[in-house]
Image: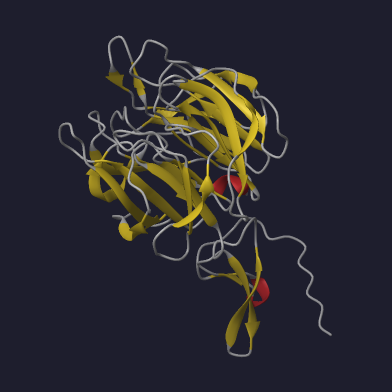
Length: 355
């Protein structure tokens, strides 16, 4: 019997990287080992294998009704979304957060008579089924941005179209049901931001403010393990008052879509999470839209749904696009969701914040 002992691999390479002794790294985040004149996948370096990472999408608004639908995709495999179950409370604009096993949605808007809610709901990502009660957030609010590492979820902001633009950042321990706890404050109160994370750093970007309504290009960050106020990171290429969690990332790069002061755009920006500075252009979505959502593995980012340009009665999309996070370029068709809304929220068990 042959024994393989690997003490340390520092950092994660890109596709085709070969370490000493012929150990390599492929496009699906697997270590590869020499086998004759070829290589064989052996072990995933960190977290859930990108080949099996599951993305989950839930909630939203159809233009006439709030929905509790939950659907899922396998991020590495293009195709239409599949039914997962139902939220126990219909919401749009909830904050999405996830570990490798559990996904959480915090807050949102549920319509009359409950309006903004402080409900936190969760699922076990690997097992289809309905959402369960997790606890309560400190504040009742909607259009909240959320991100997470493997243990802690953080969420911030509130709807931009009222005077109640919260700058509160709250956090939860994802594996432990209970109420959220104060983390700190963002640099300004605004809603409909986007968020992404590495294992150590959480990013909030864009969004809108009210009285008067403006569109923000602010990017700020926190260290997820340490409660504190956020710190300036840089600026998006333009304001984006309808980012609405249309964001995702690998462990090194964050993506934000719907960039533009009107909120109705197809522009995607990117940042390097570990390095403060301004965002740069990444490419374009397949459609101009607002209020879409985002989720990712460490390799592939997906953007889904949203509202089309035009006046009431509005058109809503069920489109899912995808990009390769490491390679700037335009998005490609992935498939469709089984329902059509805007302000749905999504996460995965293989995103960049999981290490």
